[in-house]
Image (cartoon, rainbow, N blue to C red):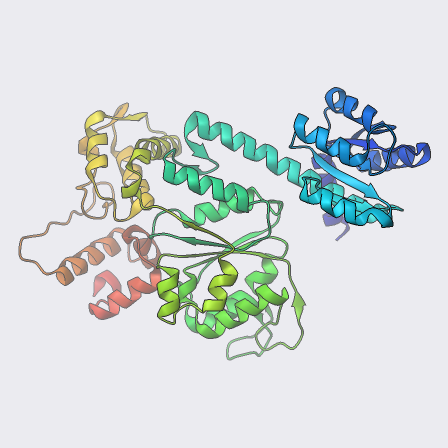
Length: 471
């Protein structure tokens, strides 16, 4: 246990070392004490005796955080705040205030201050506040790097695209990431919903804490509640020991709940309660366990239609829908296709030690003419295959699969359809071919087909293919 605490403190000190803190206080003893205290926490520090000197130190010392008294001669803390916002609005300003001026400090927060502390200063609360401000500044710098990447390379973290549709997504991600608010992501299968969730987590103050993803459609209904909340020994047949659920595993981090509309109504009720109460009870348990988790949910169906159909509780929908973003299908942002294709090519060429470095003009035209029902996931699969098959520097049309069906394995089976075939028979052949390609790995087959695992199982039952390709 002591090793974990030590490592956490080391990481915090390393993060703080990148931050410069300016202490502005007219009382000599208080200024000296605060400066020394903050320095022991790993921050680089400087001090000023009043607001006027503080403003001068802003340009000389270039702080990322300012800790300033509210009432000072020559220039007050509020006047310093206003001046700092004109110089660098990214600086986090924390106000120190006497009890009688708390209302003024609260008003200052509305005008851009990061937070305030009342005097006499509680060192523990100050430490927590400075650590959070340091995390915020670190996140803001990462966002600035992402903005430069977007401008230079058409990428925002792991998300790729420079189209207006994707820029709107980036803007919402940037707004949502620093907060603790729930997020609801909608979009067709294969549009990159989990990639967005991962980016939100990585850009948040929770980035160093766990990120846990759960596909609600891939887990049997009888086990989903146990998977999410955990269970006590003996809670049900087969529960031979206590098991932690994802809420415990992701404490202080982020949970991504994919295909939220596939969750049973009973489990949705319990999820809503956790979001409201910030505590949960294991299956078969009696004790409430407090938890600090940010929830990001996703669905490939229209959530409002799911509410109308009774698949998604209305109160849960509104609780999750604090920030919402609808990911566009690839066919609606074809301008991003060259960027995506090149990024996937670079990834798979490096992974497979291949020489291919670009997509030929003819091959790119083929890609751009295709409808991409499987969206970015399907493009990724196609580019992986093409990169493996390419002999030289370019991916040519001959390296692409017959676009219009799922991409087969390199050198694998092909599928042909004759006129007059029914849609059901075409679907049956496509599922069989895909299962053969994945060696009956249904999870992988569902990904290639752009459907959930639960949907694939339903189709297998309906088409009489319960044992997969071999049936």
